[in-house]
Length: 258
Length: 258
DNA sequence: GCAAATTTGTTCGTATGTATT
DNA sequence: CAATACATACGAACAAATTTG
Image (spheres, chains in turn brown, orange, green, red):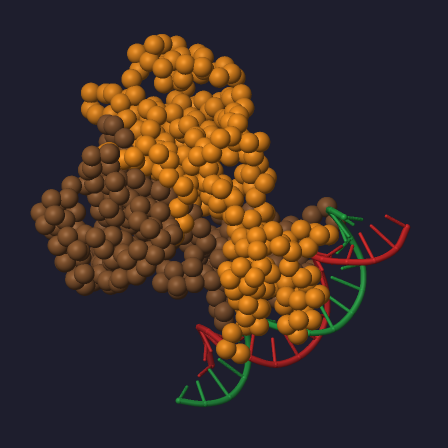
């Protein structure tokens, strides 16, 4: 066999979608009908549909049928603006919502300790917020601070409520701490189980998430030192990221493909 | 059934990997042995292994067996440095290699036309290069320019060879064109078939790619206008991206998790 | 509200093909 | 060439979700 049968069936269905013969939202024939059409068993048809599902081209709904996927207008986050906090901007009008911070104190795992330059296991404060745009969960953000900041007097970091003027501004007026720069690091990975649940991602692991790790640096004699690190997790398929440099037009361009 | 049997088996295997009982590179028992152990049919075991495969936790090799995946040290690309060209920097010593540009002239598809502010179908020059680090394919870069630039005299854009001083510098001295800024847009998607082949990604669509769309802007009376657009495609699992802002330490920090 | 029909999800069994050792 | 292990394909049965009458 030059190529597996299920791949050829998937290819044929793919071209029907690409060509527009099957349009977004259209229902595909049922598995039994497809099996009849392609002279294949239901399991082979299922392999073909699975192949399309993994690429996000179709969506199977139990009890209903299989449908060609809808193109979703992605959210856009601009990483090059804002001086410290990673805030999210939608490219279309939408109501943004953010939950009250969920505050915790924990021993720093390695991936936090490495970023904050504290020993592994040191006490850190974490502040976790969930963000929604148009009622759909758009990101989860967890920020970690060294406990030293609280000992020095920044006790409001422990309050489970928004610091309206911004955490950076608060630390500035309270401790004289000044953020002089930050570094973002983007990585793509499969979602954890709780993330898949929160973002309502299919639990077959095909839909990845993007993590933006933003480390904030403060001034110091020997050069900048980190004082906080923020992990923001986005569902990769619904999100894009923009970084501007120099002079660029202000108008937000439409979503890019390619 | 509270939960599908294959999911419970996958969960059990997952915990053996997480706990370290099965270490990266270790061979798992064969499908028949696992079927015996969990009192499940071979097909059900295959469903469980498939679930782990989709998350990149194990790798199945025909004729050999199934193995716990190795953690690969990701490459890092810094988006905030370099004034125009998107060049790649490894975080570890490695020999970088880039192919000679493959030059083409084509009608602009919409995703290029939108970026370059030319009509769809207008003639554009594309220059395509493949990059390797340590012999492994690390990225594919395609840059598109409007044909107008050639008509104005920048004929070397058509040469299928590297422009050593850089394309921006060349356009500057030849046409007096000055790049005043650029905008990067990152998006994550499943690979095209040729990309999966080039990056040697599994063809089941689980391993996504990151596309960085960099639009370069030149000076103009009414504000900056685009004159070129570069699409750089990376295998998402082997790559991370860094954006610096303000004062940050120079030392390249290790790869982040979370 | 309930029952029937439709559709996808899971599991088993079996057979054959293909890649590697 | 033979043995082993994964890949593909078929058929069958029941479960779960949804819509319809």
